[in-house]
Amino acid sequence: MVLDIKENKSKSTIYVPDIATIKKVEKLSPIEKLFTIVFDDPKKQEEFSFRPGQFVELTVFGLGEAPFSIPSSPNNKKCFQLCVRDIGNVSGALHRMDAGSKIGIRGPFGKGYFPYDKMRNQNILIVAGGLGLAPVMSLIDYILEDRKNYKELNLVYGALDPESIIFKDRVKEFEKRKDIDIHLTVDNTDASWKGNVGVVTKLIPAIECVPEETFAVVCGPPVMYKFVVKELEKKNLRPENIYLSLERRMECGVGKCNHCHIGDKLACVDGPVFSLWEIRNLKEAI
Ligand SMILES: Cc1cc2nc3c(=O)[nH]c(=O)nc-3n(C[C@H](O)[C@H](O)[C@H](O)COP(=O)(O)OP(=O)(O)OC[C@H]3O[C@@H](n4cnc5c(N)ncnc54)[C@H](O)[C@@H]3O)c2cc1C
Image (cartoon, rainbow, N blue to C red; front, side, top):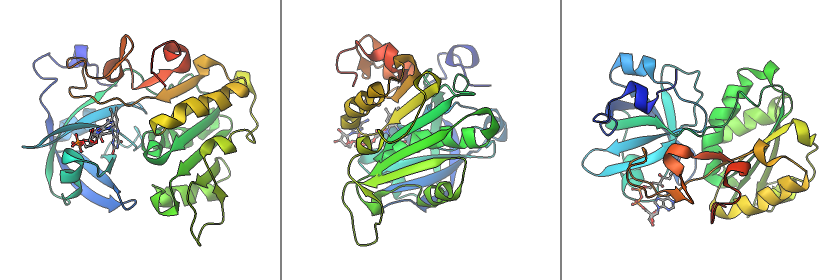
């Protein structure tokens, strides 16, 4: 069952984090690390459930909180993972922590998630850029764990350069599998790189898809969305079948601080995943 803020937690406790322990820290790229986390309370760990695309608020005690998407599979009940880019106060402090460190976790938050239920028996085209691969990893694993209930699965992933590719081991594993087609590209190449060079949008036209049977998922840096959406529309994908994970600066995660407005919607409670149909007329949504 997914945590419902209104039903499962009183208003006074949605702001109180649960204590958790970092069990493992892995370097994914020069600026991203993967943290494996377990709640200290075994009951909380057992009950913790989320949907692909949702996020948690992570507290570094004495410093602050920041939202992070969950890249691990919702089916893994023993722990969950966060992929964090070292960018500022909270993320920087987290990068200096080792296994055994204590942190706080609130959530999961976000009513908008990748609609894995509607995607059953459909083709899925995932377009991710940079750190945007992290939120969609949860969806990819969920689909691979229930593979027979989904049709074609295509992942288009672009990174700045070969070194910046996150989840490299997983990407290599996907390349070997027959049930996921992966299309990789980098902006800047080096001597080791034999693959595509350029932006992700260049790879989309070559992917064959039946528009009325295809769902698309997009997650990446803000600049990417408009151009990716244009390519998907050229393929005649329906706006209600195009899902975008939209990040906005936010504090509370629960609709209180009002920092994450997208038109009349809030990224934290209405999103962070929206269909193109929901947000296409909202100013500055993409
Ligand atoms: C729903 C959601 C999911 C996210 N998932 C992830 C994730 O999986 N992994 C990850 O590494 N990050 C993720 N982020 C972004 C992450 O929350 C920010 O990087 C984080 O808040 C940085 O906090 P900080 O204290 O380290 O940085 P700060 O010290 O607060 O800021 C450092 C610099 O980064 C800028 N900045 C901070 N946050 C943002 C932001 N959200 N958008 C644009 N600029 C920002 C600030 O303006 C400042 O220049 C997510 C954000 C949202 C809203």
